[in-house]
Image 1 (cartoon, rainbow, N blue to C red):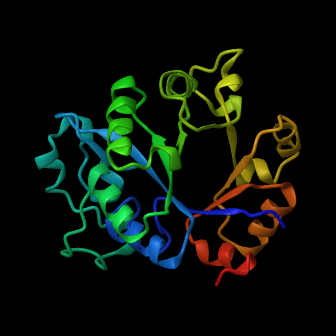
Image 2 (cartoon, helix red, strand yellow):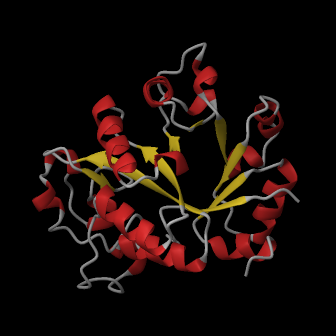
Length: 244
């Protein structure tokens, strides 16, 4: 079996509020090789970690982080009550900045790898994110993800970052040459379980498969030739790989 990289999706989001420091810490302590997170900018141009941009789902407040200053963002509780109830309320669980995330990760696990999902499709977001990654000396240990081909191209052309894009039918602003700027390709379990998987695997790029949260799904990803597997709950994945 090839050496498959284990990536925690938004940290260890099956058990902890996604994209929070407690989720990242739990993933690190579990022993993942990498964890993935999503980057937006606040109104005062601070990179913060949240998937949707709008804070309604995870924080219960119907405002977008791009319309709030960092001070306002930090007043939100990112405890994801719709999923976890009151379990994490009142415990100081906030939307972390990218810098807080990097400080935690590099302190606990200096060798950790990062899946950096650019969610706000602006060059400014890329530039500010890359600057912090380089400040912490981790740029070369990152994959850059985006559902936007223009952003993937920008990252590759300006920074020669290690890029992972998605199938063309999922990408915004896809152009005839967009695949030229991919180093790797990301395939969801929907693709992994379909006849389309073989089509995209024939492109000859290393494959990131997500999110495999059962042993059955993990084994299918392995059979399909995954190089990196992302999981909301990395335990079944690590069990199959003999790492627990």
